[in-house]
Every structure is written in structure tokens, then in C-alpha cells.
Image (cartoon, rainbow, N blue to C red; front, side, top):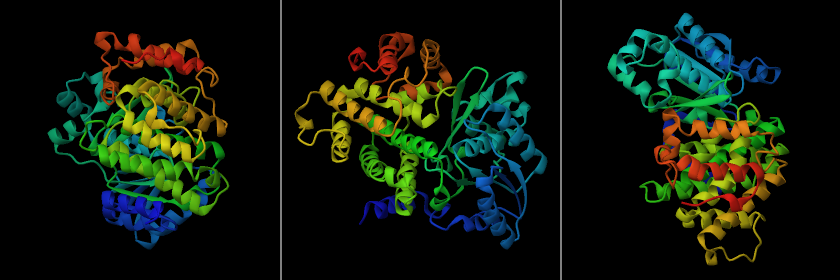
Length: 437
């Protein structure tokens, strides 16, 4: 079985009939929408690039006898105002289903907008114990499981969503996460809830042909971050072996096909899509941690995937005493790809040296793509470092700390004692500054 065949088998085993993926499958969107009724709301990009794909979706809806209205999707990182606009339009149209056609920002925005359009402020106030000023906003839902609490208390189901992905990146079409940004403070926050996982998803990998170089690269690095962060945190967990399988397979698909995908080789585009989809599978069995947490405070200067890519090597060193097996598994893949010397004996290295060897390989990989390898090179300032440290103390983002293979406790001073030095190292590229716990 080839790597692509194995990836397809894993995704089919995981999602079954709820996920349609491959080449030439965009016409299946109408069939998916028809399962929920005869009226849908299509939320998508208004760009010229999207027009031909939207026409295919519209034809598939018409062929199935599904009527539709079309509204604009979200901008990058889904600013709050886009979320509220989409929620208002869903409330106005009252469709049988909502189709989100776009990348992670539009899909995340629709996930959250459906929640806002479903539950009344009075219900949210009563169930979650928040005041009326907050009950009509998205804020009470940030964190883990808040949507489920309201759904179970009110017994009101969310409008079904069909997530139609257009980018090999976040795998938002497959997951329980919704990232929303407050542009005023430059901070992203996260909803984590099984209730917002789209019941139907479609990804025609052919749609990614012709995608901008930057989007392709950022998406690939986001997929790698999903895989590696979950695998690092999997020690001692019942999903460890599954995470190992997803990570090693996903790394090979992404790293070995990325350059050909940039040249729009169709087979490489399929491999890249499969690899980032495995990243989505990964974050549904485990959770991301430090790099993703830090990326939420860098939205004003960096795309998400690039921010994660910069931070990932430095957290790898910090976690190194607890992830020896993971480091060897991924180190071998990076060696095969030429980023670690072929004669290096990874198994003979101590934990810290092994962590630094893998981290340096990740930095070399990033550099080979033309990415910045430090926060200062990317334009970050001391203010960004302070913002990242403050965000780490936010109870609504606590799940990122708990997902770490070396958990950090803000109340015990761990943020200043350890995370501060990881971020300083990421700022100037000096791995020796990282203090291990």
C-alpha cells in the first residue's frame, strides 16, 4: 500500500460517508446539502479565483433541487465583525443547512456563526451564567465544551453545516475547532467543541491547483504543526500509537511533496491534501500546545502556519526530555529528506542534544522554504512577547498548556520560569536560552 493509499484508508476509516475527498468531487456538494433539506445558504469567497468553483457548487445544488442564497465568507483569521455579519445573515435566511466554501477562516467563521444564530442571549446567560452584555457575543463560547453545555440545556440542535475546504492547511472542515480574532487587540481565541464539527465535509484537492505559493507553504506548515504538537503530547496517552502513525505518514506526505505541489503537480497536490487532512485527524485525537498558543498572539504580523513553524523548533527543545521516541521517529524522516546529516546516530544522543538536532533540522527546513526562522526576523517585537506570555495565563486558552508534554502551571510561576525563555530563544534564535523543566 502506498503512502497516499494508506492515508486515504485512515481518513475513510475515521470519517466514513461523512467526508468526500479526492479529485473531481466538488459536484458532490449538492448531494450532501440535499440530505438536510431543500434550502441552503452558500457562504463563500467573492474572489475571481472562486467564481468557477462556486459555479460548480451552484450547478450541483440545482441538479439536486436545492435552492440557495449566496453571501460573502470571512477574511483571513476571521475577524469578529465577519463572524457577526455571517451570523446575522444565517438568522435572517433560516436555511435548512449552511455550506461554507473556503479555507479555515471562512469555515471557522461559519461554525461559530451557526452557534450565535441558534441560541438566544437569554439562554446563554442562564446556562453559562454570564451577564447580558456578554451573552449575545461569541465570548462565552471560547474554551472547551461551552457550545455542548448550551445545546444540551436547550435541546436545540445547530443548523447542519457542509464544510467545503479549498486549502490544504488547517483541516477546519474535519474538526471541532473555531478560531476567531479580535483585531483591536491582535489576539485570536479558540472554541473547542465536538458540537461544531461539521456533519458533512467535501475537499476536492484539485481546487488547490494554482493556489498562491504563500498559502500553500503556510498550509503545509500548519499541517506539520498539528501532527507534531499532538505527537509530542501523546506520551503515555492511549492514542500514542495512532498519533505516531498519523505523524510519520503525514510528515512524509507533506515534506516529500511540498516542492512539487508548488509547481502544481497534481499527484503532489493530492499528497499534500492528504497529509494536512491527517493533521486534522491528529488534532481530533489530541490537542495542539505551545506553538499554536503563541501563534494566536502573532496574527497582526504572521499567517498562522508561518507563526507555528517559527515556534515549533524551540518548543521541541523545551519538550525534549519527555519526547525521546517522538524525536527519533521524526528525526529519521527529516534525515531522509536531507535536513540532518546522513551519518548522524540519533539514538546515541542525549535528550537535549537530540532535541536540538531535530530543532535545527526544522529550522533548516523552514529556511529552505524562504521562511523566517526567528520571531525578530518575522517582525515581532517585545510587545508580541509580552502578549504571548499574557495569553498563556488566559483561562480560556488553558487547554494549550494542558496539552503540553511538559505541562505549565501559570499559578506556580511556570510561564515566567520556562515559557518566557522559550519565546526569547524563538525571538533571537539562541537555543541555549531554553530552560528545560
